[in-house]
Length: 299
Image (tube, rainbow, N blue to C red):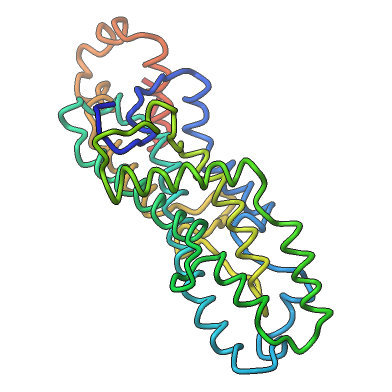
């Protein structure tokens, strides 16, 4: 990584191995099945008693309308960052380095980097902003607790729920590093970055881990319903026994259908048998995984 470069997990060289090849082919199905089995991953909900009570029945003053306005703003940002992280997970698994020469990768580098920066900035704002003139999960929680409740017993239920879902030390540590990166590498660029020497980076799996903790907290503060945090085609679903395709799935499939590496057997049909002997076994296995994905026969 060059000096001053914004840290991004995808700057590391991918190490392709058979286990990753299998994961590439099956991850979408396993991931969708996992999300369908555990609705808490993409449906934010509070304690059942609060989830089944409308905001207008929880508060005694005009705060119910203000609550709905503030909640909608955070909900929108949660949907944005959740979809961004799920897309990044899919892009991370895709073997761009096998399909493209380094000089042909700039578009995908920009896509991945911009998604990463977007996730960092939104998660930082949700988890670290504490000033009274900012709107974050922390200030939202404070406003809710300070509001006039119609029932003290329901307020106590929320207190207990928040205690159960508070950030643990690891989540706080990730949030702290994210704050450092936002202030000193993204929003501002310091000439001397001691944090880089100390390893203050945040990888994709850590961003996802912090989002999970944030999702639980958002759910605790969500009243009157369960709130879906994956929108449109990113929402997990099964169609005729198979995971439903997303727009990104179709884009990546189109990349494979037009890619020289994947289509070598068809483009060099007259000499493919000879060429095949010169390809390393692991590369051939990955080629066949990719060909199977777009319904081509094994090479």
